[in-house]
Structure formats: C-alpha cells, structure tokens
Figure 1 (cartoon, rainbow, N blue to C red):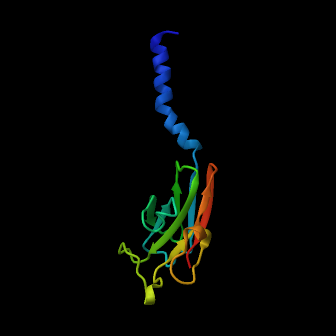
Figure 2 (cartoon, rainbow, N blue to C red):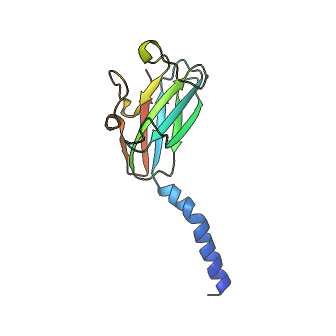
Figure 3 (cartoon, one colour):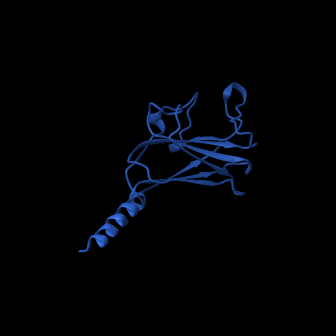
Length: 143
C-alpha cells in the first residue's frame, strides 16, 4: 500500500475515533416534569462523586421551561460510574434559588430518584444513579 494512502487511513481513524467513542459512551437523559408555573428556567446539575455532591458541579445544563412545564437535559459522553442529579426551577428568572420560611423551597427543587428528604438535603447515597449503559433515562418531577 502506498504511504500516502496509509497516512490518509490513519488520519481518518484519528479524526473520527472521538466521534465514534461518544456515540457509544453512556448518555444520561433527564426529563423534568411539573415545573409549574411554566415560567423562568430550569437548571439541571450533575455531580459525579459523594465528595463533590452539592459542592462542585461536574456538568450542568439549563434552559427555558416549556409551556407544559417540562424540560429535557442530555449529558453525552459520560464515563461509567455513579452520579447524582439536582434540579432547580428558577421560576422568576433571577438566577438564584429563592427559599421561603426556614429555607424551604419557594421555587421547585428536585433530586434524582425523586428523593424528598424530610429536613435538609439528601445524602449522595439517597440520590445516586449508576450509569453503566449507553443510555439511561430518568424523570424528575418537581412538586
């Protein structure tokens, strides 16, 4: 095989390998429902360890709430492992989570596994997901 053809084949493999890898690496789809009133934005935050949970964001997506109170976030190219998701519905669009009396939510807040702690925040173990396949889909309903 001539050297130029071999170089072209090698260059193609190098260029397209990352795309092929992303196509088969785990993806997490988070569907948010009941973000009512259907105003403002939803912020979906992904944490990748117990040590960083609620301290250091791993990945984050945000966007406007649909008229039906829904939003979908897709996290592509994840490594297999344990993750936790936290969702905040910024109803008034002031880029802050407004809490009411005693710190309880005035705006929507949700966790993976739809965990609802009695007081305070949940532990990582209460909300962690194991991502080990090409596509994992979850729904978080805001109440």
